[in-house]
Image (cartoon, rainbow over all chains, first blue to last red; front, side):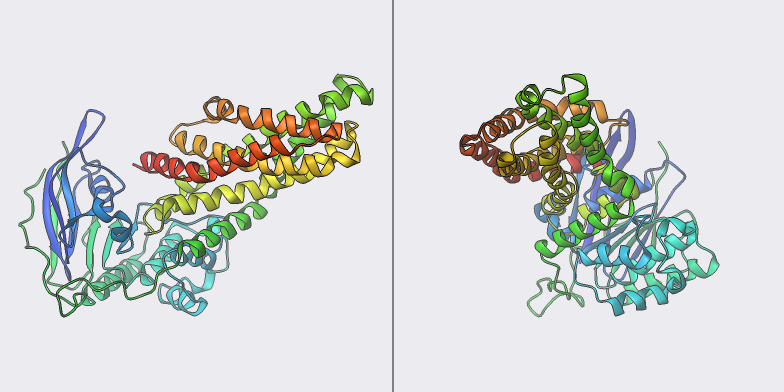
Length: 207
Length: 254
């Protein structure tokens, strides 16, 4: 199970955002994408997810181009962007019920357990718009715990808005995922508190 | 740009490979597209009922337009009856356009549309469900309100089934046409005018056949042929619009 990017070139207008990025990462590994603001971390993650089309280069998963079976690839992928993908007028519980439910059936018990694990149990019945940025991020982490069986995680700044405890929680979730044979690619500004030897780094430099 | 990280090799044997070395399927059975579409429909309906102001906006607009016409034209029922098909259909068309701009915009802004695109489900199916919710929240209520507005314009009670049927079927096509426009203009700020410019020409056949069916119903004649043409447009929309909508959303998510 390998995610491989080969010679990725991506342009946004006249900006050459990705300039020949190549890497390969296998199960049990966490690849940290680092770089200053505007270096292309988010663009790289979006390209790896299949949301963006690079002008040149290929992304392969399990040895096949991701576009040969995009739906199949997406069913093996969990992507969390900058902002937690939550509807402000729904509660945390309702958001998870939909977000995970469209992928596979999720029971109320599983949702409760996930919310409890990330410390979001106390506010799971409040509309998400009333939550702080850190609380919303924890709800997104609850979604991630429900996607533990998804082999590939693409995380964009997963520790943003989180306190120390929350940052350790992210580290613990990643560790658990890696120990199950998962693969994580995370764009970050600060080091993740993950205790694993399978941590690698890809530094992107700004154009 | 940094040096690329060294190549770590091709797929290796691991916990998710079976004895033959081929990937094991996902451990959990996935949600069927029907169930996922049902969840999408239920979520959109729930959201709409939590924003009641937006929910009633098209209906209030429809009621205002159809009420103002008699004041502007003439209180004479025979004259109002003559213009009733046009009034009802123009008002229905414009009302259905009102909520279109926000059909996918909120989801695009809060990232849930992105998650739908990455869910491993058919994006066409999920967007079709969203369009279905739009129809249930605007098209269907308009179809139920149209006879009331028609009666105030002097149409006979016997024409009510024809009016309901034509607006109900025609508004399916309008929602689907609108969904394509909403998807194409997703990346455009304040896209209302552009959206109307794109979708109104496509909606003209619906307007023409819809008004014709309503006119025949009012006259007590058979409105079957124009209603069948409206049905054909709706079927064409159901077949093609979700694919075009999904393609446009994917482009705008890039």
